[in-house]
Structure formats: structure tokens, C-alpha cells
Length: 211
Image (cartoon, rainbow, N blue to C red; front, side, top):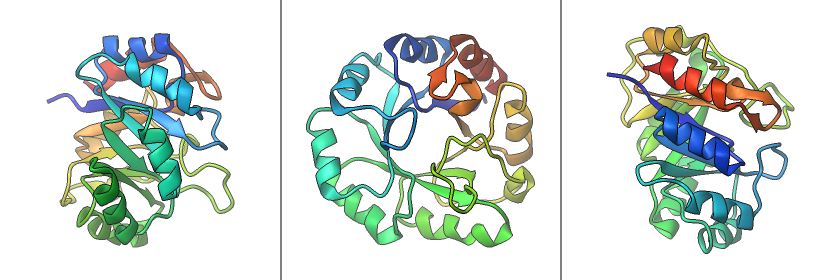
């Protein structure tokens, strides 16, 4: 069965359309001012409103407070919230209760010691995003084009549905899926021609390679 694809960090209607036409299942909208893919609320509302039926709209947040979540959700129709910071399992539970939306928790992996967190977050999140852990002091928690040893996930059973992220490109995504058994994959910088600039040709190539 082909892996489901999430194209994260979309900023333009034509790139969102390219993702949908290529067969992506999830569209990621970033609400993190330090990211080159950050969207203002009005921009995000227009983009989310243009998403075709069947394309799940995922809002990426990094350690958001309640006021931030409330402000975005008052205007932007989102289907899933992605927490990509240092949110605790307790905070994941709070966000789910406050918003009534499914929560995807990103978990950074650099080595075997990081795998235990997949269990802890699997108890509370609706989905898990397994990403490469950023280097100490990195400005961005994801979208850095880094990968990790995918063999760490081989044969591993997880409590919740999950997707693989971190350094994926059209050239390596098929191998990543083969090594990990990932049912879904997430890409951002791997389908860009420059920081924050999606390339429709790379989006199509990535989705095709994931199938």
C-alpha cells in the first residue's frame, strides 16, 4: 500500500494545488515566526480555505500557548494540530481537550535513547511524527533537511499511527519507507528550490516515489 504523504510548509495556493493534484493526503501550514514557511493568520485562513476536500489541513505549532491556538483556530479551518516543540505529554492532553482536534506530536530521534519518548507520547497523541532531532542550538525544530538512522525503527511497534520525517527527498523516500515500514511520510525542505519555496515538480516526484 502506498505511503500517505504530507507536504509541510506550504505557503502558496498553487503549491497547495500541486500537492493535492499529486496525491498528497496532508497539507502542513506553519505557525512559527522563525520559520521561512511561517504564515500569518489571514494568509493561512485563505490557504486552508482553498484546500480541496480530502486534503487534511495540519497546523504546525511550536510550544504554543492557549492564546495562540485560540487566535489561529478562530479564523483558520484546521483538521489536525501538529505540536513540534518541547510540549510534554500533559500539554498534548490539554491541547486536545481545549481544541477538540486530533493532535500529532513530533518526536525527535538521534539515537536509541530517544525511542522511549515514542511510547510516552503514543499514550496521549492521536498521531506521531518521527523526525530527526535538531542539533543543539538549532533555530528550527524541523525542516532542517536532517535525517537519522532509519534502521532504528525497523520492526518497531508503535501505539498510534505515525509518519516519518527528516531529510526525506524524492531520491531517498522509497528507501526510507522500505527500511522503516513507514505508513506515511512528511517532507518540507526536500521539495523546495530554496528556503520556504516549494517546487511543484519535486512535490510530484516525491509523491510518486512514496508510492
